[in-house]
Image (cartoon, rainbow, N blue to C red; front, side):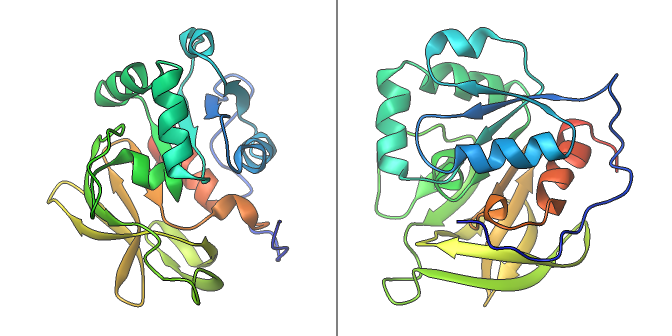
Length: 212
């Protein structure tokens, strides 16, 4: 479900037909279609990763959507995608993980030892807000973006601890909900579920194209 708000986008995001990035979206489970729609609105070329053969296609970045992290992890393992994705990110492929994507990218998840992509130096708490506050919507500042942005949390995790190489981009109630490490961007919330493209634009401009 999209939370409709006043759309805020930059009139010039630095992309033209000649430099439009080609973004792969992991389309195994979760809110991948919403990510695809938002990226296309910003002028990116988008294709889906559904099986190992899709991974060989040329790409400038990867989006790992929200969903059920346990299911996504199992599918990644069964489809033999876990290792090539981890290797590509380690070698510098830009990646944007939301909610379950954050969990999959984090090296540590509290109380969990399962294999993950594990490329970001962060400790994450799953379902951190409990049943009563499992889903909520607020506005808060995001470093690198002017003004507050809408944040939709759905049974969300949060980042409990990061290493020195990780930059904190947003906090809510003292909890880290967005961070960046080199070319890895993660959020505990779902920016794709709001009619505001600024977080995706930040990913394309500052992480993929590295135009600050």
